[in-house]
Image (cartoon, rainbow, N blue to C red; front, side):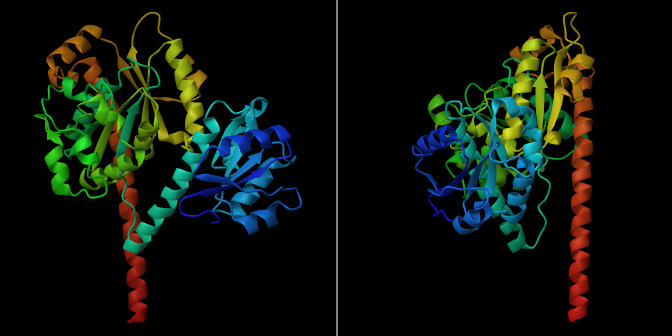
Length: 414
């Protein structure tokens, strides 16, 4: 690529002077990104890309009429260049088609605050990761095993992510009889340890300080084993420690944890930041928790738009409807119609039980395993169990196929 190891090159393709000026002034503030100073026309677009080999291509949606065909051709002919389409607000209906055509992301114009900066950094981060991981798999000559990692998140505060994540970890441990790690991903004001009545000084920061040098022995020393049998990684003990966690270190820690624990549940809370996105990147599925009210529906719809810019496939998100059964609730059918998604699970409301469980430090699934809340979470766990078992079966089939191919080649050589 044209950029050095420290900088990334960006090629802007637009005929709109306002977009050109706005993009140039924004990128000029970023030390890690250099804007290629070449004017691109419809005739010169492919020669310029071939000559400059940019890391990122910012493509104006209005650059030419057959924009979807252009995106597809660029993505096909130059797979090492990430295409980000600059989409006018009145063309948001085409966001899905833009991504399906091969763009890594889209960004709405006029740019909002630091959205351009966030998007180019995000896309570049994914590009780097996707280049490293296949290379590692090739060197080891082995398939990448399923991670079986799930982040429980809600864009609305008070939706119940901690309750869902904690009880889900307990259910999966009982159902699958495998080691389950529960991570408190709410680095500020996390309550997982409180819900489980765990008193420990160990926390995520004990691993962050050794990111890149972790082994199973150190990990097992830091994580805390609960009386139920699950393992727990509490949130940082202070705000200062929490604020010092960098996404790149957190990503390394997650990779190490996935080598030790076959199943990981993360309480992602409701604060969408770089570290939360890192947890989501590391996960197979995002369990998106919502309540049956209009505020929660609005927030979930906004998150679904964000998930597209993060390049997450639609099937990565599973909807969990929490605190159901009240008279004023928005009906299930309306929720599925508005969000255009089927619910993966529903959990009834029982505020008195939830409060007593929190105060006692005893999760619902332990205190009353036959309660409707426990049964509802168990159904969700069984749904995840099917996903986990299907991933394992697919991986084993792939390994057998690869082993068979190796044996065939060795028999021909012998």
